[in-house]
Structure formats: structure tokens, C-alpha cells
Image (cartoon, rainbow, N blue to C red):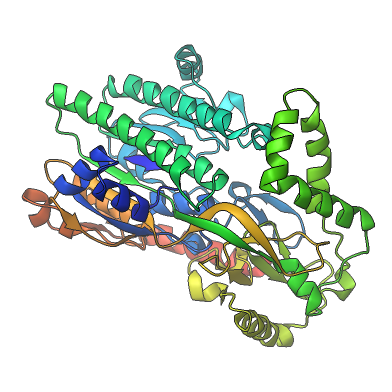
Amino acid sequence: MIGLDGASMDLIKLWAHEGKLPTFAKLMREGSYGNLESVIPTFTIPAWNCMTTGKNPGKIGCFSFLQKAPGSYDFRVYSSLVKKEKNIWDILSNYGKKVFVFNAPNVLRAYKINGYMVAGWLCISEEKLTYPKSLREEIYNLNYKRDVWAIEKILIDDREFSRRHMEITEKHYNILLHFLKRDWDFGFVVFTELDRVSHRFSWDTKNSLLRHYQNMDRKLKQLLDKLDSENNETTIMIVSDHGFGPNKRIFLINEWLKKKGFLEVERMPAIKLANSLMLILRRPNILKILRLLAKFLPLIPLYQSVYPRTGRLPILWDKTKAFAYSTWGAIYINLRGREPQGIVKEEEYEKLRSEIIEELREISVKAYRREELYHGEYQELAPDIIVQIDDNVNFISAKVGYGKEFLEGFDGNHRRNNGTFIAWGPDIRGNFEINAKIYDIAPTILHMFGIPIPRDMDGRVLKEIFKGELAMREIKYQEIDERERIKKKIRELKCHNEM
């Protein structure tokens, strides 16, 4: 299973048809392929979590990288608030399958499995980077390099940015080859190159993007050649957590809430000044100059000192009905009895949500109540309202101090409906196009291994992509143990009471 973070199926189809991606063209011609619909909100986290568990965010309690802790205005790493859900590799491992997991973004720390694990780029501890621990020295001896979103990458020029990410892909591919030499039944590796460059480069010409898609195409060819030389009958599944598109319109969600009277913040001239400076620094022509100057002047410390100031939000809680944190469109109602300084009465809650959603629709911004999107024991941990990015609103920012509700963007950002799905191998139908959902991946893999699928998975088996015995094989389901069902109900009640 090869994850290509941010890979867009529409670009792959286009360039494969034009002969610019011959390996992708071969995989689609000889296999099954199509768009993979992502989750809302359409971001790395929770998308990979939903893919590898087969469950919606309400069941796994994961709605973004950071989440608001119950009874608090504090935000924490999502995994600290909920119990760990079983990923596809956990289930396979429990059934005695040998597995390896490398660079999965939703693995924040490596843990014991029946095989090997290297945590993803969000890993917060070098000590927890690998399982077993001895594997860490082994991969560093193979020139392993972590991919991180460092501020200095903003101030390096385009050529160096491309070179660094191609280098990371090369190093990660070599480690993948190292794992393939071992005894294994299932492997999962994620390459982040396409996501990084899709955020960085202009979508007007896409020439810079094509160069990186072609780099991944070459790596896939090398992998296919290796498998062919070994007469290997491995099935390959290529997936992405979301697609991409141009980022031309940024919605300043808290500016809007402020304008509508739902939010009050302190007057802080420093925030306005910092935002104005950041707007200037982010202009493409200014960035080119800064990237040249950064080679000679200490601009990175200046950028690091200014950038955090733009994210500060000094909210006046006694005058605030609704607020948004982060850049992912999560709106929370400042509900009395639930929030420390809540002012919205319980009987006003639903009316306020409806008012906000309707007024957002008037400016063509899509918003949903949490129960419209999620179901499960952690539904009440979700934001009260979720705003979705689309072709009209390409990005959402929670910053204030700009004095307007929309900004012009100039790079790329996520899309929900053009993620990538490709399956290729001896049991896969050829030249077959299908539309799939992110929840379908986990149950489909379990079906391939003949392992019962938990009833609480939200996806379906993509049975139509198979031929031969797999197409005829009956789908097996695993019933939920009665004791586990009772424990789950108790957890739901405790979670509700804590609200």
C-alpha cells in the first residue's frame, strides 16, 4: 500500500493520457483506478486516520491535528483525548500477518506490532520514532531523513525546495527497498513529496508540479521492475489522503464571526502590524527577493518571531458566542455549562448554529452541523459547526487583524473529491474505473486477506475491482463482542456526562 500524500487523480489521468506519466498509465491500464473521496475536514489528519481504520471521525475521536479539550479552551494533540483505534496493520498483525509501516502521518509514535514501524513526520519524539528501537540506528545508517514543515523551507528558493523533497523521496524509497527484503505480508509507506510541492507551487501552469509527479512515476517504475525481476505477485494499492487544487481564495473565519457580532477580541495593534507584514512577506515577488537575501542575512529568526504573533487570538469570552481555532474551519459555540466562560444558553444553542450556517451560505461558504457529518461515541468531541473547503473557499484561516473576510491566495490547497485510488496486481481487474471513498480502503484490504471485517467500519469492500477467486470470495464480517459493546456504551455515557 503506497500512500502519495496529496496526489490528485485528475492530474494523474491527464498526464498519463498525454504520455507524461507512463508508469501511472500502465498501472491504470492493467488495474483499477478512480477518484478517492476524502473526509470533512479535508486534511491530512483526520484523513489518514479514517483511511487506515475504515471509520468516520465520530468513531475514532479524531477531527484535526489539535482538538479542543472538553471543559477547556485549551487545544491538545488529538490522540491524548481518546483511546487508540485499531488501524489496518494492527488487525493484520493480530491475525499473525507480518507487517511494516513507514512514515504514516497518523502514527505519532511507533509501537509494538508483528513487524516493523517508523513513525510519520508528526512524530514528537526521536525515542519513539521506530519499533523496535534498534531500527532507528538501522534506518539512519541508510541515510533516513525526516520530512518536517520547517519555517526555513519558506525562505529557500523553488529549485532548492524541489531538490530537498526529491532527495527525501529518494531516501525513503531506499528504506522501502530495505523493508521489502524482509519477511512481510503487508506493507504501508507514505511519500509526502506531492503534497509539499502542491502547497508551494503555482497552479497556473502546473509545470513545477508535473516534474514531481514524474519523479514519483519513475520511483513506481523502479518498484515494478524490482517486483518483476523477482517474479513477485504482490498487489499494489496507491492511495492519497486528499486531492489538490489552486488556492485562490482564503476565508478569514474569525474576521467574519467578528463582523457578524458572534466574536469579540481585544484591540491589539501588534497583531494588525504583524499581519500586514506577513501579507507583504508572502507576496510571490517579495518572497523571491527574500529567498535571495536569506542566503546572506539572518531572515529566518525574524520570520520565526513575527509568524507566531499572527496566530494569537485574544478573545473576550464574556462577549463571544462562537469562535474558531486553527486553519481548519472548526467553529465552537461558547456554550454555558460546557465552556469555562460560556454565555450561550442551552435553549439558544440550536438557533445560533442554524443562524451561523445560514449566514455562511449567503456568502457561498458551506458549513455543517457535526451530527450531519459524524456518528459514534466521540461525536460530542467534534466542533459544533464544520466549514468545508471547496472550489469557492480554498483555504480557511482563523487569524484576525486584516479588516476583511477574504484574502487572495497564490499556491495550492486540498480538495475532497479528487484524491487518488489505483489497485494493480494478479487479482485486480484491468482498465476498470471506479469511484471510492476513503473509508473503503481498510475493509477492502481485510477482504483480500480473508480476514473478517469489523461491523463498525463505515466503508465497504470494493469487490468490483477484483477478478478470479477474490471476486467470488464471500465477504466475512466480525460481530462486535457483547462485552465490548457494553464497555463502549459505558464510554459513550461517560463522555456525554463529561460534556
